[in-house]
Amino acid sequence: MPVLGGLVGVVNNFSDGLYTVTRSNPSTYVDGRHVPGATSTFSVRGSLQPLTGRDLQRLPEGRRGEESIKLLTETPLLTENEATQQRADRLTFDGWEWEVSNAERWERMAGYGRYILTKVKEAS
Amino acid sequence: MPMDWSDKEDAIRDWVVVGSGLADTRVIWASQDGFRPQRPFATVTISSIDDVGAVDGQHTEYDPLRPAGQEIELYTKGLRDISVRVQFFTTSSIGDSCARALAHRTKLYLRADTVRDALRAAGLSPYDPGQVRDLSALLGSEFEGRASLDIRLYATDGISEFTTFIESVEAEIPALNDDTETIETP
View (tube, rainbow over the protein chains, first blue to last red):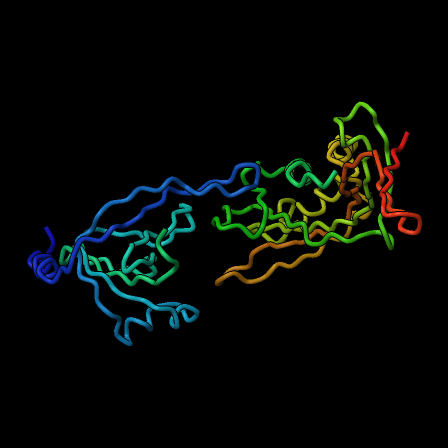
């Protein structure tokens, strides 16, 4: 039970919809050629909000000029993990795919996570 | 006759796997979307393809057994100089398993008969085993062993087009009359 368990209710009250998230299995190499991992989709309920200046500072320097948004949700999302060859989760919004580039995990404390997503490409 | 890149890529990569002693999954082609494998690993790049000589040779070959309309083959064929860069990445920058050692071992295996036979079967002939360069550098707060090996190989390349004989020619003789006369080849 999160220490501040009531906050997830607050986050859900601000939720503005259900969003589709695509998660990839770790990719592999076959004969030296990259084989992307299989993907699956699921829905998350959350609150999409614009970034503040402080949020932008959390992004790597080379990505601060890219369009980004933040999502508050109780569903844990994954960032990129080179050690496990795991790609970051991607959310579909407004006809585009947005990749999770930064995560603040407040699940233990308050039952929700706060994620920064960066626009990557048009949704197929 | 155009280059079969898959066969050539596989042969080149097989040489690196055998020569370096790295696991198959640790030798990858560079410039792909995937993550870098865990170290030690190597990346391979075909960095350039140059023509050897001013023009390719042009040849004509006749085979009556080919399908009608394609009896004559017109083909050009030439020699290509292919440069391959192999880069090695290891945790250590010294010792028997450092990047420099792996690169040197891989270069040595370019002289092995089995390796050369496999490359020849793919239409590749290594002629310049190149140089090993140690490029170890800081990655974060630790040094990463890095080395580069550049080699050059010859391969042939060309294209074919097919045509047939001229069966008939129509010619007008306007000076004499307005008739046209058809001349057929025997």
